[in-house]
Length: 71
Image 1 (cartoon, helix red, strand yellow):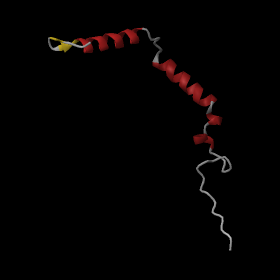
Image 2 (tube, rainbow, N blue to C red):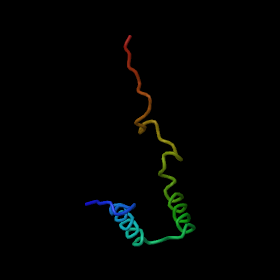
Image 3 (cartoon, rainbow, N blue to C red):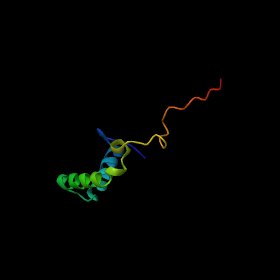
Image 4 (spheres, rainbow, N blue to C red):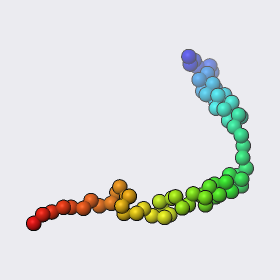
């Protein structure tokens, strides 16, 4: 139920309150630690990344289809 109370609506205040309540419960991590964790994850999984290693033509679903023609 929303109603207008002066220049600020009750719904807007409630949304702000709920957002702040959710953010207050989050665990904070330093940016330097998050960057180090992300770098470590990327390095550990680089051998499985098709953008870095490429995709073999036999398993590539986007390869050009071969056209069969009989003469």
